[in-house]
Every structure is written in structure tokens, then in C-alpha cells.
Amino acid sequence: MTLDLLPIGQRARIVAVDWSRLVDEEAQRLQALGVDVGARVAVAHRGVFSGMDPIALTVGRMTVALRRAHARAMMVEAL
Image (cartoon, rainbow, N blue to C red):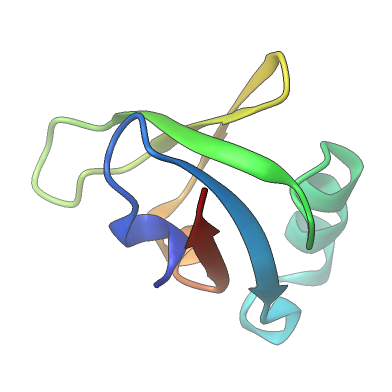
């Protein structure tokens, strides 16, 4: 499943990322923050408006906000 479909609180591991769907600078920023293949993540919150953007993602002890479009580029497996 893609990261944008992961239920809130469910832990998962990123198994694939289609970096071509992201702008190079955005991809580099996410990789620098640890959002990459093998990372263990969980969705902490979703935005409340119609697009449900942004998604608050827990990576280790850090919380990272990312766009739903970015989350769609990431495949995860539930843990």
C-alpha cells in the first residue's frame, strides 16, 4: 500500500520510493530527514481540510510533515 493510505497509528516500513515523482530538492530534503527505503514510520496525524494535507509522519523520534502527493510515491508494508 502507499504511505498516504496507512491508517493513523499503524507502524510500517518504507519498502520502495518513486523519487521521480518528486522534485529533486524535495526528495533530497526527505532523504536527509530519514524518509527513505527501510525507514520505520507511522502516520501521526492528517490535515483536517478536504485534501487531508499535510500528513504528520513519525520517523524515529522526529515528526515530519509531508504532502499527500509525496506520501503516494512511497510504498510501505505494515509491521
